[in-house]
Image 1 (cartoon, rainbow, N blue to C red):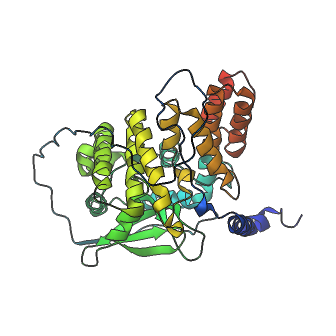
Image 2 (cartoon, one colour; image 1 turned 90 degrees about the horizontal axis):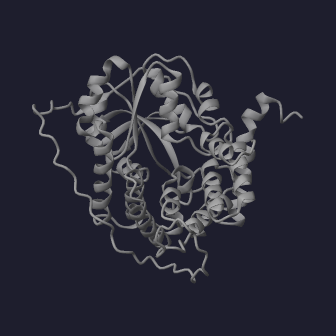
Image 3 (cartoon, rainbow, N blue to C red; image 1 turned 90 degrees about the vertical axis):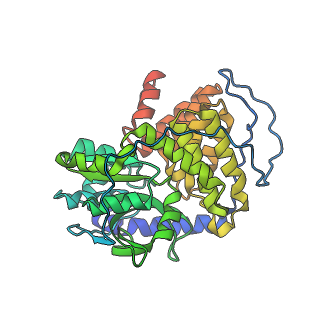
Length: 407
């Protein structure tokens, strides 16, 4: 009874969850689990067929590369871009340390506070993650909060680079980036949001507002680029409506979302052949994610197959085994390629490998695949579980309504 008092639970719940996770991961090391797609050769078909699955091939042999994306020529700027200073440090943020799994709301609160917003992470979290133990807030959920709950605006793009970050900061706009996160005081690789508020060319470093480590953290350009790659170089910029022309000027051709995605897809394809190890895995994954956005689901499925084939060659201590907590591209690619069993296996592997199987997107996609294979009761149960962990999750609500099922 004492533990369930809100002031007590808010301070102790994360420690209970951390202890539970450590026990679970000690007994079943998640970094040793390898997902192997079983339907690589299956073409998309409206009629699913179930066949015996072959023995898994755990070798990191790569499949042929998909079609090369040819980008249109970049528009020639009318004026030479204005040189930016070698060092810029923005100020005026209200830092706060995150609560458990709350880096998204906390980082968004930093960015909003720069523009005079008075709230904090506890105003944002109930809307972006209604179930407080939800593992992740997606970039689109953060962008939606800005657009619907504030009078500010936001751009959400992929394929960013250090030059673009520096130009935004030099123009007075802090930038939210989603990146990988590792440290000695927690178990393995995970995702994390930070706010970029400065840079120093002489030191080749950026200044980050970090909800976990604290304000004004420093990270080298190379480290940021490597960790940022894990999330397709995703970034968000919050700004007042009247400053939109400045934001569009910094974005240049990337202001067009279609061009932005095509550029990101080409960037991932180029990196595949210049990188190795875990960074190459991320490059293949990014190629798949961008091809999903371009609705090339067969090409995306091939790219994800390549990434999953590389995964066993990554040293266990470096494996990003939480990857599917944060990104849903493989579900899209496999589902819309007719590879329903791979969707089910990937979702089940992801959920079974968690200390708490709380991930509404995995339940949702497994439900769609189960329905496609004719298992309607299992699909309905997963849709209802998805809503349990994210009340009012619109995709699950829509599917249950289509099936004539109440929550």
